[in-house]
Length: 220
Image 1: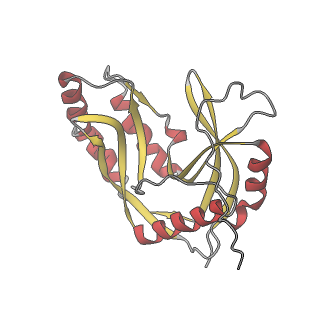
Image 2: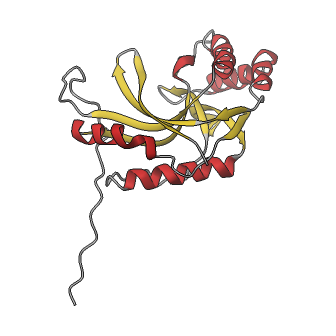
């Protein structure tokens, strides 16, 4: 009996593209969830506070805040177009659900912050179902997803270098301040998740900007 070898999945590079202005340049993609305006307003409030402190952290802009489900990396233009055209089916069988903010922290810890994040709570079981469904969709195009555990969060900033003790103390103090706590409390208001998006990331010296190239509606 002849058995066929399993099809090898493609793992795309995540390196910075040489020239994103080139129409033939690969697309840098990820799958994620957009945030409603009410949440971005509160995130902007937090950013207004933390950016007043001189810390070696590259903070996001509030309109770029999102929940990443899968980072894909660079894919050829042809593959990107296939994903874009088919993405409406990425969330097939998954219905709408709700999430809410749940405090803030850092990976691996606030004492050694590499990524500063906002936590999430709510219908996390449904969120994980969506994570698996979109993973299955991507695997259908031989796109290998990241193997690390899915830990839902919204990235606020990334450290440019290891922080020293006075800097980590300052970060902890501001994240625990009454002003930041007020915004975190406001973020505990639930919000509906009704779509999942395919994002294209554009890199520059000023940081990353994101463009939504396709959406998939959540519907039972």
